[in-house]
Length: 130
Image (tube, rainbow, N blue to C red; front, side, top):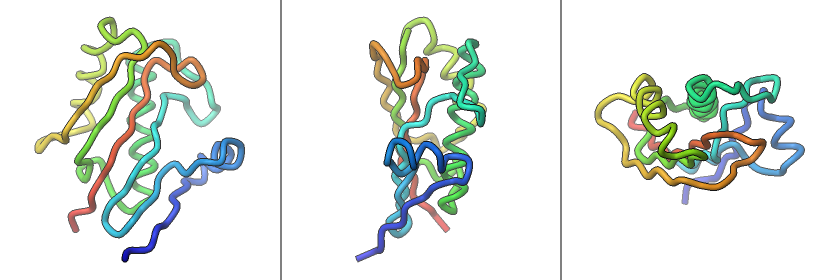
């Protein structure tokens, strides 16, 4: 059985310490990422939806890279949206700048509220192919 390794990028250590969660867990070639919102290194959310979504994908990239993977390894994408119908088009445009073919499986869910007042939260599962 593959050993479980907690993945914590240094810039996310404070969140780990405060909220007691792993940004990701790697088991063999599989990486299970916790949901990432679009807060920057200062912990603040930009009011612009495109900027927030971009930062959320950047945060996912940071976690994956710390785990030894990349966005190209993503096989499953779950996104949670406040203002789903208002922002889903923006989300898809930003997403397509980060994820290329072959596209992962994707589930998008509209929600009433997210942590810290975020508009989007992105959770992925990746499998390292190399």
